[in-house]
Length: 507
Ligand SMILES: O=C(O)CCC(=O)C(=O)O
Ligand SMILES: [Fe+2]
Image (cartoon, rainbow, N blue to C red; front, top):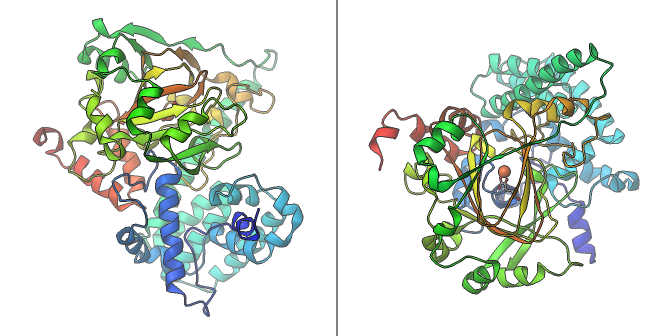
């Protein structure tokens, strides 16, 4: 490995990149580069289910959005950097020289993952503590917007150190002095999600303590209901499954979705020449479903590599057909149950409008991490080849799965639900798991908010879509309100959704 690559891997990119301390570093273009890099990370690095994503954006840097962010007052003009930015800078200046620290970082060049693990080391915690103390002193001599900025920065230190109550207090104080800071509002929303989970955990833990005699067990998962599409109308689907947040496997539908029979070989013949970004699963990743972008490969090379057992397992995950493969997209009919998707009623170019249906091709044995689909979306998946094993939880189970919110308002999880450790995570005993092995030719509905994990039992080919209907419209708007604090396209989508004519006017 060359020196250059090596040093690259040691880099932890700051988000947002800060030059405040480097008054001699007047390198605007470097700063913009960094912003652009981060937008790419947010867009392609976490899949389109996360905020800030633009499948519509042409590949490469999106200068307009970078400018939008750069001019955001609370990103650039707050008095102190956030804990993440300060930690990244500390790493570059001091931490990276410490061999011990290097060893505790995972094999990932993803900045969020590296920051998460760095923040757990003693050296980093000492740094964070001393900086938080400095900020607390500084607050005493400041007022107005400057004080609001420092309080907000201090909250980010408390957040990263796991002192969420203190973080919430600082954020409220900050917003009293400057209610318009979007970053502070966003951080408060994230901290509130964490506190909600912790409060539920405390209550359930208390109820368990009164019942010490029973051994804690992971509940036996209930099988997901199977129903034939021949006897299930769209209205019935909504009434029985979508509106009651119940997963269901629908048979006898997938065969009719395409004119030609779709197989992995068929996909290779049709779009083998295209380039696709593929993911890899990184244990301990801070990213959504522990999936990190690995590299870009040719579809045919990727497909040829699926049977090579010694090769690193890569996942062609959630790749938009309308955007990247319109020729395949045209061949596909969206199942009638999801045709009323509100995302399809938005203006051309709107966030998520063309993101789905999307393509999944996986090698046997690969499973992404436990996750919740982003922005409160419902989800369907049609399996064309191979089998996929699914484990779902109810949405109210979320706090019992020990979620943490790192750089995002999407939860991350450390628990291994396929191999649950009840000693370490006793609250898993109180969850309500459901399971199914989805067979080729079957369609699955996953309700909004339900944490789930999937294992590809065989090499597999599937097409999926995230969607919004009456059942999750309110939750989606709530989530978009948070995402809109960071992403102008989420704001635009929210505005369309909250327009009182939205449901009546559009085709
Ligand atoms: O099939 C998979 O690996 C996971 C699909 C999924 O849950 C998702 O895309 O949200
Ligand atoms: Fe999912």
